Image (cartoon, rainbow, N blue to C red; front, side, top):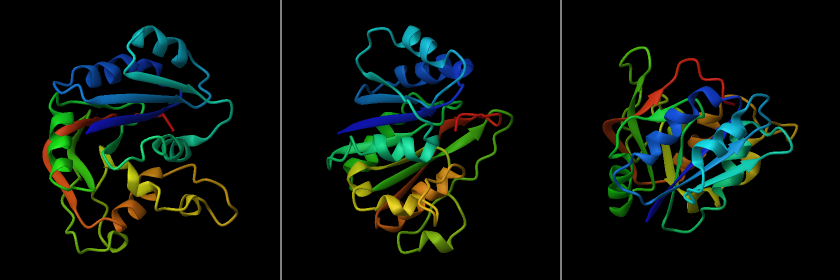
Length: 209
């Protein structure tokens, strides 16, 4: 069982070192990390290559068209569709802040979890809005509670049509991807887990979309 991190990037060069080292520092090395550059106008790609070097646990994708976060995440997640695959999303300006994150996730998934999220903190305070969600609750009628470190079994996404992620004109949603991605995933799951340990550092000035 492996955690496959995915990060869509746009002009995120300033935080790349913190982001990459937060994953590299994990005590459990059962992970991969795919970073998707979405037509950045700064030196994001060059900085990525410099920081990653020849570490083959990382994969860089450079888009030739603007896709925004949701489409980048959905399309990349389809590479991790096996039953044992875990997908975990980190926004480009954020980072992990717990070196046990991978172990905590694998532990929950090995016990049958289908979707897992964790507590988090903001870079300006200790605010955390993530909390548990009962298995029997329809997530569309429950206060948003699965923010920030969002993870799920990759196989679940294959059950959801891409039309769920598009507007009435057939265009992929460009903003507010958190709920657009996670609500249909959580809706299809019956084993939801919240880890009440802070694993994710949210940057209030995030611009990676």
